Image (cartoon, rainbow, N blue to C red):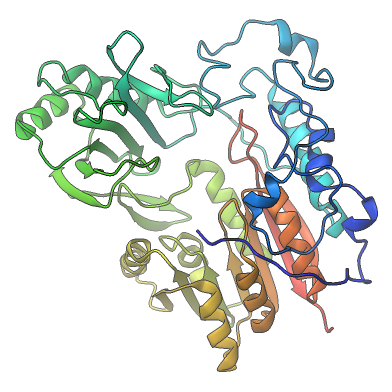
Amino acid sequence: MEKRTGSEGSPSEKRKSPDKKNRSAAEKSAASFAYKKKSYGEKAAAGKAKKPDKKTAAERSHAGKSAVKTSMAGKSTERKSTAPEKVQKTKSRCPWSGRCGGCTMIDVPYEDQIREKQKVVEELIGDFGPVEPFIKMKNPGRYRNKVTSICGIDSHKKPICGVFRERSHEIIPVKTCLIQDRRADAIVQSVFSLFPSFKMKVYDERTGYGMVKAIQVRCARATGQIMVTLVTSGPAFPSRKNFVDALLKLEPSITTIVQNINDRDTTMVLGTREKVLYGNGYIEDTLLGKTFRLSSRSFYQVNSIQTEKLYNIAIDMAGLSGKERVLDAYCGIGTIGICASDKAKEVIGVELNEDAAADAQENARLNHADNVTIYADDAGQFMTEMAQKKEPVDVLFMDPPRSGASFDFLQSALILAPKKIVYISCNPETLADNLSYLTDGGYVMKKAVPVDMFPYTESMETVVLLSRTNS
């Protein structure tokens, strides 16, 4: 994940600049999103939307606190929430609501969620161009195909597994979640139930003793394959064969079981070493007719149903005719580029993480995508080198992390100057900052389509089409 830096510059005269609103992105977000627990970024209220400065997104995000903070519960530091009264008073349908900090909108009617999320996106990026209505999920529940349960010791010194309370390391014993795959929830509990029989101690982060740090279950929606990953503090795993046999007896639908070794004192759940205990050590799923191999550490969108809608929108925006050269930056395991490969002449995927790049190469081979080439490299540097060699690119797909694209990446994109940029964003605030720079650099936002990838949460995904102007 790259750091975000930036530079100064005058706003474009060919669009209605967000600067004219004279409000920061966070102010707009907080003012419009009454249900949110915290405003996006909690920026200084006096800021204006502008090209990225030389601070990272995180530094700007914490530079000052937003003038207004509201919460789903109706509590506020400076004013009451405008959330409907019935949301504030009725009993939550989730017994852990307000404790785990996950699905903070679990008791908000779905249409109300969509309406408020629409306001946020329009407030943040509406000045750049048209924002289409949110793409909703038909049945917005149990959509998460990956479940991670943290293991530890509770206040009574008893073993526990669940999720961290928001902004703490207190584990909330969530046994089932309304946005997680039912099979995954059940398998986590089956794994946890076997620990006493095999004298497997959960890890205590306070003392540094114990074996099992986490249980992760990943389910492939299209194929039904299931991968279980046990994260341990060291390589030792006594009676591993007997444990695997006992688990498969309880959960015969499991496709593969992996031991992930994380011996570091870190907030990262997964380590870098693994042992395959059962099966191939991976599962396969399909998106838009393409097959993708997933390891425990592969990045893969958690909502498979909405991902297909998201990718269809992105590929349609690209307007591919079979003659284009496409660059898929931040390509991960190659999903977007491979899905688009049938409609393009050539697809180049660039991914900094070498393991993900290797997965992408394998996925291209699985799909016989001979026109797809994957490089393990920094995308910004790669684009700059392409520009220096005068290698043309017709379409750039970019799917950066929540922090947005770095200044170096954006600058490289402007130097390369593809005809179209299809930007997939998981954070509308950093998207607004990046759009400001790209539009000042000669691009115009043709349209934005928000997709509800994460119902009952405050997160949102947006696909944006930018076209290069003659200037």
